[in-house]
Length: 512
Ligand code: ADP
Ligand code: MG
Ligand code: ZN
Image 1 (cartoon, protein in one colour):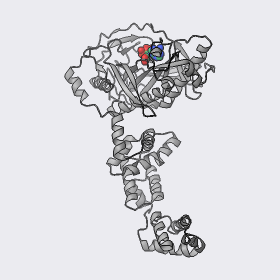
Image 2 (cartoon, rainbow, N blue to C red):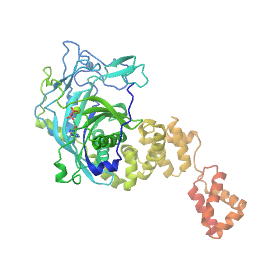
Image 3 (cartoon, rainbow, N blue to C red):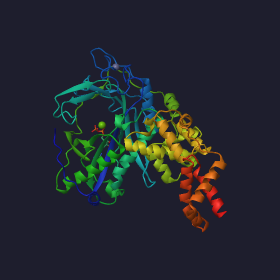
């Protein structure tokens, strides 16, 4: 195993006194098309290794590729959503290099003729300000296979006994979205990086073109970072005129939080080298989630010779303007606008809306409200109990098998007065355990508030009699003391009463 040497770093705030960070982000998006980019093979995640392959994606002699129209459509829609120009005519190109997980020994990609270029995406930062990310291009390419290194302790190639290759992923359509060098963010560069990848993910999800699961690799980010001397504030003209420093490219950073951490770490690492009069090596680097550092990968010059040339086996892609216009009409409402509209509709505060976003629950809440829940009820369940569980178990709320319809039904049972809060939580337990719908669980477990006010009143009388001292305090004006009585009444009713109603009756009897 390559031992990770801990490199020196400079305190982040100190870096910003002397350097101006610049970054460029390359995001690879796996499209969710049913078939691969140039053949009819299935693209399903997690299938038996090498069960989704054919002569085309295995690069067997004489096999001929045919472009997937659906993938081109998705590429154009992504380009349009990123405010790009769409090429009237463009080609695929062969990017030649050898790697065992790439059976053709070249990757079919696009080079100087990308399908989309010159765009931008405005991203919102935590403080409500907007940063415009300039998009250089979005191009089509195909994914590589996957190597599995066996026998070592790290799963990396170093120290492994042997390697296995799975070509199921080879040929899955990818869109690579490349930003221009992003300047002017200053110390907020890491935040901008995270916000951009987050906004991009939200946009791609709204477009419905990808699963955008960073943990499964359907959205992958490479972060390029460089420093240049600081001569003014980040946005000044003087600062903008300073030439860019040498960049490093940290590969495959696979969560939003890691994007932020990796950019931040690189900034502090590069500063330590520059402070000593050293030079930054232009190289790829690996991000280590556990230790929070990057380590050197391979040196990579700008002039790397991939011997790109136009792919002779594929016809050019030349979307008509009518096609592009028709696709433009299929674009969803921009996520930022939609979010603001939903927040207003639902009456959430900024803080509540942020919680919802952090829990990844916008869609779920939207569907739950559509299924009849109150916005407050929907938010309570998805960002409360369920988000807590998801966090604790390191899962996503969508994976519990609880649907928006379930939550709407549960919310309805509380609103109709059939369940109180603690009963509703028990019902949710049952739904999570696969016992059925909320109504089925409540029926099966015999959970139902006692609607009979007579029974509740009798319980209140009994409790007041048994706790005369506490009752007297309430009579004397110490209303907080009623809490203890409510607790007793709930116990008396074996939890099957409405605590609010119990409180009303107690106060009416003692102070009314
Ligand atoms: P590569 O083939 O090395 O991946 P790309 O053109 O695909 O090159 O992507 C390079 C990325 O790095 C782009 O996002 C670009 O804006 C960014 N970049 C280029 N130069 C610098 C620099 N000096 N500092 C930071 N980012 C840079
Ligand atoms: Mg690149
Ligand atoms: Zn195939």
